[in-house]
Every structure is written in C-alpha cells, then in structure tokens.
Image (cartoon, rainbow, N blue to C red; front, top):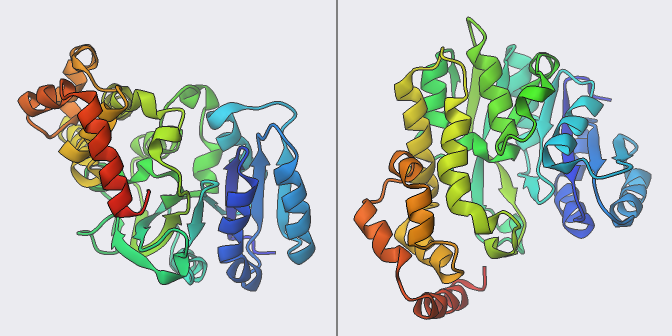
Length: 330
C-alpha cells in the first residue's frame, strides 16, 4: 500500500454518485496502490453495501460507518484522521479525479516536501460523460508554481480552495489542528489550511495548473440545503472565515481573497443573482441585513444588486426555466 498519498472521502447518502466517482479513478488508484478512506454519515446502508462490492475489486478501501451523523465538519475531520499516509487528498463525495492526476500528484510529492498541494479543477463538457474532458479550468491565469509567500498564496488562490477537493494536506498539517477552532466553520477545509500556514514562519505550497478534479453532480444548486442561505454564506460567512485567519496575513491579502471568490466564480454575477431571486432568496430585506458584507464580497455595483432584489419573481422564474432548457437542464 502506498504510504505517501491517500484519498479521503466524507460522504452522506450518495452511494450511487460516490460509486460513479470512485470508479472513474479506481484503476489508477490500484496501479499506484493509493488507499481510499471513506467516512460515512449516511442514514441508510446503501453506501456500506456499495463499498463491500468495491472492496472485492480493491482491498485498499477502508470504510467507517459512523454510529450517528457527525455533520459536515465532524465527518470531514474523521476521514482525514482515518488515513495514516504522509499526504491526504480530501475529496467530496460528488467529485472525481481526472485520469493521470494521481500519477502527477505522486510525482509532485516525490520531488519535494510541501505543507500542502493545491490542485486545479475543471468544468466538464458533459457531466454525464466525464470522459469527454474539460470545458474550462477553474483557475485560468496562474501557472504551476511553488508558493513561499503566504500573502501571495491567500490573495491568488484562497478563493479557489473553497472547493474542498482541490486540497492535498500534509499529515503534519492535520496533526497540528485544534478541532475546536474549526467546529461550526462554514469553510473548514479553507480555515484548516490557511490557519496552519499563517502560524508558520516559512511555508511551501505547490499549485498545479493541470485539471485534476471535477464535479459529477447533475443536480441543481436549488436542491442543496444551503442554497437558500447563499447570500449569507458567500458574503458574511465567507468574509468572517477569511478575517478569522492569523494577523500574519495582510489586510490586502484578506480582502483580495474575499473579493476574488465572486470575481472568479461569478457566484454573484447578474445571471446568478437573477437565479437566486427566482427562488425568493434575494430581496431588499436580505440585501439590507448583509449590506456591510455585500460591500466587501460582491463586485457588482450595489445599485444593480438592489434592482435585481426587487425584480418580479414570476418573470425571473420563467427566465430561469428557459435558460435551463437551453443549457440542458443543469
């Protein structure tokens, strides 16, 4: 079994999707004997039965069914502590790994000692057929490089690491966290990484520009339990997570990190805001409640955001349905 790298997956009631994700990279995991750890918060036995089938094909799959649900943060920390390898690749249960990426990550880890490796992600041409490849990269303008300046890292890539599956943690980093520091944190994977780096006098983090991970979930964001709170999450919660980091990070790096999430993901672009408005999750009351954090986190002029917040919901809903039909339903 490979002692350098493991793949760690916290999961909850997604047996079918998880199996699809694992099978996409299973042959490469077998080739390099990379162990796969799964911590299961599910309320049924479907994932357990699926893992039993997979273990007949690959013995280095390690599974734990939690006696009671631990929640997102608890499951996250459980699976990271299950693995005893030198590096741990945290993977969402609806995400998968591009072919060749396990080999590439192992090569990166062989060449040097890093606190963490940050991987690029891609948007698939077709989520139903991931073998068709990438449509576009999540990080488009940064080349593969080693970061030794923590402010530069936070400013340039902090926004990107809100995508959990892009982080490979060193075991040393995991050993040095205080779980109480992260409980209840809306972005635990982000806080865990940058809190640790902020306390180190010297850091060494590698960013790989090649597409390594992608999302398989075909479901609409509207079905996610957090979606109704999307304005709060990506303004107030996001701002507070970034500004909770150690004072070794400059104000400029922190505010760039906050702003860059909207700038590069487009979470609050006019189209996305109309989409949010169509479900009634954006209105003048919400804008007023989070106005201070909207000023910090959103790049759109506030006047335009106010206009969208009063846009007629029936018209926004109709526009949403037309758009989704044109785009293939997701």
